Amino acid sequence: MERDTFSGLGNGTQVDNKVLQTFQKSFVQVQSILDQNRLLINEINQNHESRIPDNLNRNVGLIRELNNNIRRVVDLYADLSSSFARSMESSEGDSAGTLRSDGKAGQKRIRPG
View (cartoon, rainbow, N blue to C red):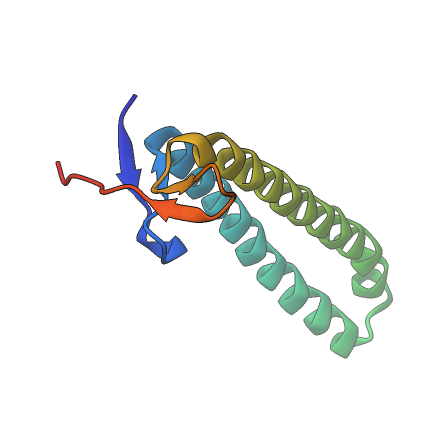
C-alpha cells in the first residue's frame, strides 16, 4: 500500500494516500456547502431588507435549506474526525513512533523513497 508523509501533522506520521484523498474529498464537499451557504445568506438578507411579503415568505424555505446545509457540514466534520482518529490508530503500529518494552517511546529511522 502506498504511503506518504503527511507534513501537516508535524511529527512525520505516515498516512495512506487513500485517507488523504478521503480528507480532500470531504473538505471539497464542505467548502462547496459553505459557498452555497454564503449565497443563501446573501439572498436571505436581501429578502429581509426588501420587506416584501413574498420575499419574506421565501426566506422560510431558504433558512430551512441553510439549516440542512449546516447539519450536512457538521456530519461531514464528524465523519472526518472519526476517519482521522481511525487512521491514526491504524498507523500507530507502523508509524515512526515505537513503544519500547519499558513503556517509553522510541524512534524508528524512516528511509526516504
